[in-house]
Image 1 (cartoon, rainbow, N blue to C red):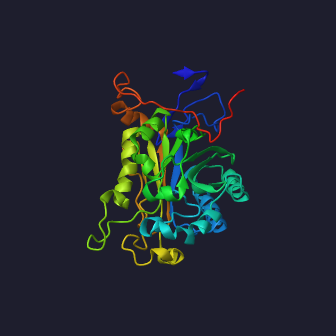
Image 2: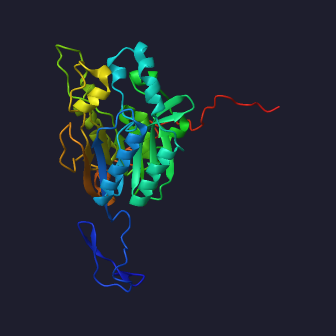
Length: 355
C-alpha cells in the first residue's frame, strides 16, 4: 500500500523501520502520536526561601534533563522558593515573622530570574511546567508557568482554590486559570497543583481540553505520623497523594508526571519553625512517579528523601488503548443527563461603567 509515493512504515517500539520510500531515508515522517517522547518528573529539595538559589538549581535540573534527552519536564508545586510547611504546623499569628521573607523571594512573571529560566528551556529545546510562587503587586499566587521549547510562557495559571491554611498566604486564581492544557510539539500538555486534582469539576474540564501529558505538581507530603503524637488524616500523606495522581491517569486516560519536593535535615534547619513537629519527617516528603494512561507506573520510584529526575519513554498512541474502555469526555459520558457549567469571564476588581 502506498500513499503519495511513500510506502507506509512498520513500527517497532515506536521507531519507524523504513521499507522503501521516494523521500530521503533520514526524513522523520512519524506523527507526534507515533513518536517516542521522553518525559521527566523532578523530585528534589528547593533552595529554601532563596529566589536566586532556586533559579540556579532549576537551570541545573533543566540542563541535567536535557543531557538525558528529556523533552517534557515537570516541576513540583511552588518549587520556587519552596513549599512552607510551617503554615500547617505553626499558628497564623506568627506569619509576620516569616511570610515577608517568603514573599520577597517569590518570583514575578516577567522578572530577570524568570527570563533566565526561559533562556535555559529554549537552549534545552524542551517543554517545562514550572511551579512557582508568583508575586503580583502585594499578593502571591500558587502558579504554574508552561514554557515552550522556544522559551515562551504559553500559559501561566494559578491555583484556583488554595488548600486550607494556604489561603492565609496565597491568593486565588481567576477564570483564566481554568485553561489548563496547551498544544506543544510533544502533544497536549496540562497541569494542576496539588489538591486541585481532587476537584472533580476542574479535572473534568482538563479532560475536555484533551490533555495527553499531565504535570501533577506537589509539595513534599510525608508518611503517616505517630498517632500518639498527633491526629492525622490519611489523605494528608504522600502515599495518598501519589494515588491521586495515579487516579487522574486512569480517569483521564492521560500520562501523568507526578513531581514532588523533599525536605532534608539541612532544609529543616532553614525552616526552623518546623523543628520538633511530628509531621515533617526528614529526609522525606517525596513520592514522584510517572504513570501511563491506564494508571500503570512507568518507572522505579526513588526514596522519599532522595533527589532525582524520574524519566520514561512514552508514545501518545498508547492513549487510544484505555480510551476504548474509558473516555469520560467522549463515549463514556452522558451530557444529556450530567454536564459541566463553566464561567470563563475573568472577574475584575474595578469595572468602569459606560456613560
